Image (cartoon, rainbow, N blue to C red):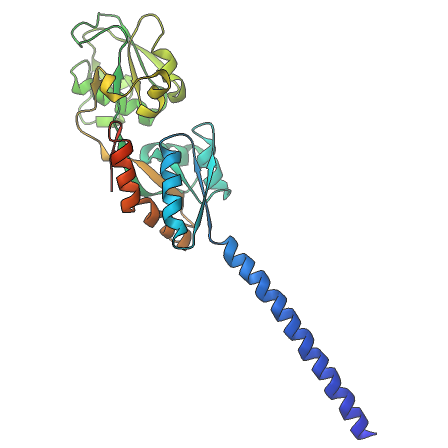
Length: 278
């Protein structure tokens, strides 16, 4: 009887080991799928050339086993919302001051990871070919968000069209204007709608980025004047979250975005509108 009982125990043990082996095999398959999934880096962006840069970087990352998935949005809030909520690992659509504004308003913890390029920004005019020709009382269209408005006013100050309070630099608002000799009127417009202001009657100057002004067939070479000295704080950045900024995904994304392939793409295809920042 004892020998029979021992045989039953051994058979049972053998079945148990087989079952464990079977489960391990299934788990290994599951882990493999998880590992594969973890190689996907989701990047939210808004428009060209940012989306184009992400696509170029994706080809670079692919060679090292990473898949960069581009999610294109239609406004200047969604990409930050996606990163903040965890729907996206990173974004590529904004400069650091704009990100900081979002953090302040939304109590988010987004982090600027890497500057990629500086856009050539400035003011455009449909009616005037020189600053001196701009009449008194003209309307000037500038961004309504503080970070971009400050930069626009700083450029006007460079051209001596206005004077700002000492020390405000690119952080000023229209309240910081101390001298306005031409009595310019301020038309504060959402960044995405500034191009439409170009054709408005009475608007002498419109501030804009190459990305948006291109929609009406203009480029930086058509501007009445551009920013004289590039302010690196406004470089378009890779942005992630505080909790994932040191992850393998973000390191891989940063490596791909700062590759020689991306730099060559920027210099060969977009030298008229931007300057690489890495």
